[in-house]
Length: 640
Image (cartoon, rainbow, N blue to C red; front, side, top):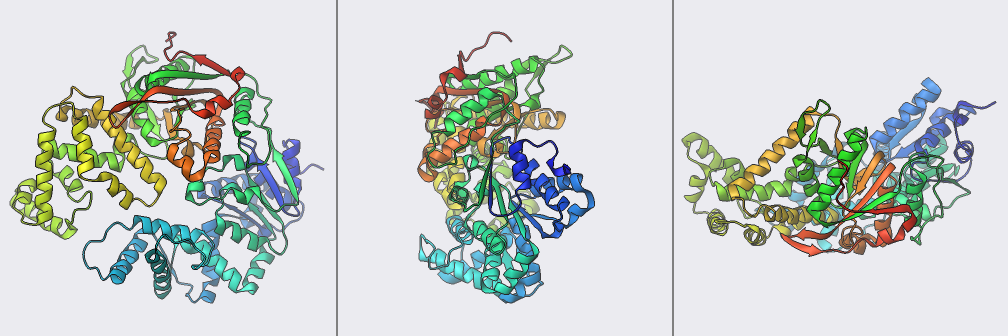
């Protein structure tokens, strides 16, 4: 008799569901029904006599765990409550709540958040350096500490960039222990320590969870890999589900080798795709086949319809953005909703031109009235002008234009850090409120060298920004305040540092494109555009999606655009050196496989860089797609 779990499954999915013993690698290609297989496998285990409490499923996000719980419950009902579906961190938290006394903590231990941890690290740093004043940024050190926590190596075997980070790591561990506290980053490593030092405790959890499943296995780091191996050590009923071709998080510690070299009894490939047309899948297969380090697989689909992949080459990045928006209008005219459409890009800095083109476009509404601005939302991030680095630059421009702009003044007075303490600012703002004297005027009366240097900076900047164009003036300002160094000091992730700096470069491009506007007009236009964005978001639920390729993983849309298909952007020059060309190709593969019916790839022959047009070359990945799958078009379209 066919069980609930075997209904409506293709042969490969059914094999993955019914193969319950041993070490099993399920290679789940994009759009192949991965989650469906996991939940049906759980249901099958229970329906064939497995105790629901013996099943443990680990994933990476609370959202994924919750979705699985709901779907398992819909299949098997009340028994699903005994299955443990959790993130790695929440599972470790549950274990430590019961067992942490064996590591010298009490069961009432505290879990410290980022703010708590920052405060302790700052105090330890002051103690170690014998420093009482303001500290330099500890972002690089924090990054080293996080990397150490996920490495599953002993302190002596870890690669330390400096002895200070190593000493701080050791002191932080002993301090947290003294405080009876643990950090979020240390949850998994403490659980591993518990299992390795107390085999009887490990045995208890091995006996309890005889069937272990791991989702998105390609994203595991060394600590998560070790935890899974420990839990599965006795019964070896370990089913890992993932896709090495979608491993795109090497920059945050994920190791694709975990899925490439997984010791397995069986390999099951899910290659039937339920999302995309054959044309899109053939392009994705062709691109990813150029990677050497991968499991061989080939996506296919029974779906019909769709079109060739459109490719166009615009003269400039501005014209590329306008051309994308015109194609979006054509899709809308053909009956699609705004929310059926996504624009994907490698770097956040590409979003500004796209946002401006969406905001400035006029189109006829269903009632025949002309409407200005296509509704959109930046997924997993902020609109360009809402990002902190752009707010910093705009705040500088606001103070240069109007030194009595108190909100902007407070934002930048110590950005980058220039030795103006919070205590000094508090005293100044209290006097400002009590005496009703503008903060700028009070600041000019202060003898504190840092305050005087800041006054001189703003007054000098006012001379630079007297007459447009302001491109060189803004470049001077960014260089003078050494904002690039400030980003490097404040941001832990090298990847995020790069994104933030690219956004700063794009801000220079923005002011260069407004070369005839006064400084006040440029600021006002930026503010109005930001207000328009907020109005659109409040007014419309139906909106175009803007997102990075990383943010798009796991999502799907009838229509996708991938902008900026140029060498140096995709593949990204800096990332290519850090995580390799193969991870950049996997990122492009993820982008291609988000599209259900229509995919457009675009590029610009010239792109603005720090206010100046720079020639570009098409992405090498474009040449990996067979020409028979492509339709080369002019960037201008005439059927609107």
